[in-house]
Image (cartoon, rainbow, N blue to C red; front, side, top):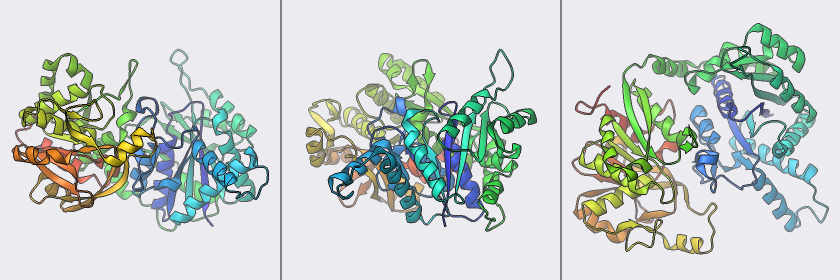
Length: 544
């Protein structure tokens, strides 16, 4: 019988529910159990594909092509397993399914109601995901914060599951304990209110993960225990730490894994072994020498704050590669719009060991990114382009090497020389305004040209990578691009679409149409990122 662990948040959003779920999953996996994780998002969007990354953060893409919340990326990285579409629920998806079933007379003509039909649909989807993965543990993260109207029906589904399977369901509350600067004392009252709010939904947490800037002391644990109806040992301290990958180790200091198993009347199937994980943390902490990477983007400014969540998978992929080479990554955010306003500032790119141009949409900052790519190509600065980064690398090469003055993308304007164009089937979708879930999404095969940088990096000529884009390199321009030295290093064998381009006579100038960052794992860095960082560390490249 599968076991279900629901994880909800208290006090405020963004306190690390996804990392908590990922870490618990890693711990349970280390004890010999099969684990999967589900994310429930309370928004009415069917998926995350049409959301603004500045508002929502990165859109993660699975192998089977679902555009989802970035937490699924954390699940994959920690569990070192692929997560699929059944593991992603939104209010929109659930309601859409119920309405479709009602239209198809699957409810046999009866009155369809919000309760219990919506919670029942949630429950059936949770169980289906568990069954498909044959998991012993299904971890379910409920998005948002307890007390919000949006997630009430998901809490109701959790309550109903507990009622019908009391021995198989646990609840964890990840709550925040602030330390007001002027007071200087850790406050438990917000968490007390969060637990009471959860109680009002018919749910009593079995474990409270107490997030705070500092570790909890015994006084605070005792206070939470008394007012939240929970044993002191079930209040787990979760202080801010240097790296998210240390969280499983931190949880295990308080024996969290065995506490969960005991509550579910289970024993470990094998001796707890986080040895490889501990070695990773040891490497991260001991790394002194750095590798300095600049990311030229446009999705990281929100007011006066830097929102790194827009590129979280890229950041983690750089970290994985750097850690594997025993280096400390120093990542800087470089505004593409800055280079548009003052092109001379692009010279600062020489201060970095390598430059990455990540994915994106729209015209803002495009010319600044093209300036950055031109500088990297001409000055032998290691360069990695991702998705839009590849398209802009092609445009830059077409303009400045092939002398196609008006080279651009059909996405940006009705350009005269669309070296990047949209496929015919995509033109139909755009004309009909069908934007959601209609891009080239998920895993596609790629055949790599022997003797290229990419072939060296992968150590294989046949790969599969995840996509999320609508525009492609226009094959009408392939001949002139190749004639002038742009290497078509990878192509999709089925549709003959260019997936990888490289510049000749350059230490590392690789741009890919796909998103390799989605498949990078802390213990298995993505080969392309690893090769990129390795080249960044070569003698002759600026060292730190």
